[in-house]
Length: 140
Image 1 (cartoon, helix red, strand yellow):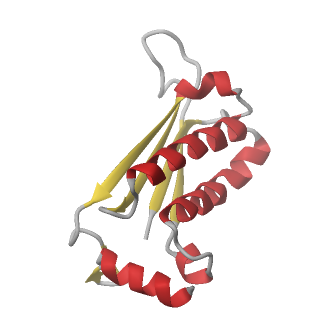
Image 2 (cartoon, rainbow, N blue to C red; image 1 turned 120 degrees about the vertical axis):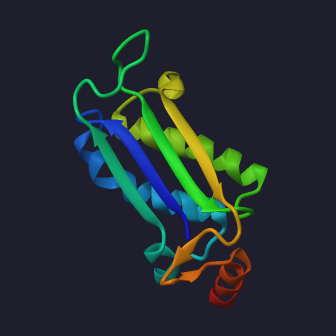
Image 3 (tube, rainbow, N blue to C red; image 1 turned 45 degrees about the vertical axis):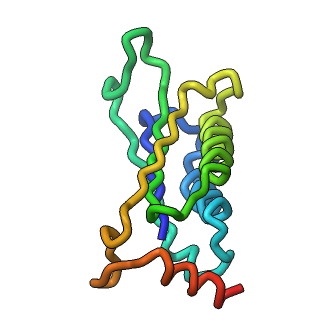
């Protein structure tokens, strides 16, 4: 049950990128979690696009757009190898959605937030990683 949020300055994504980036990020996250590609797991991979108004994001150097990808997963859902792959591919995906080059990669930060066991709830109940693994195994 992953969640991914992209924060970007308004107007910084291309039209095509704005249309596809949320679903593309959700699919990427499911891939790196190792979740089955089915309707159930797609329905619980939530994405949000937060577009900041003009002037709401800057650095001490310049006003070039910067992007933050916040990924929230249950603790233990991603190994170090999976985190590294997700970070690399999410960065490339955001750069493409913004029409930027690989040389702009430092403008994209990916933050992985792991929810401790027992702190993720859905449908009025606590969701446990082991229960998700059983659902995933049954679906394959």
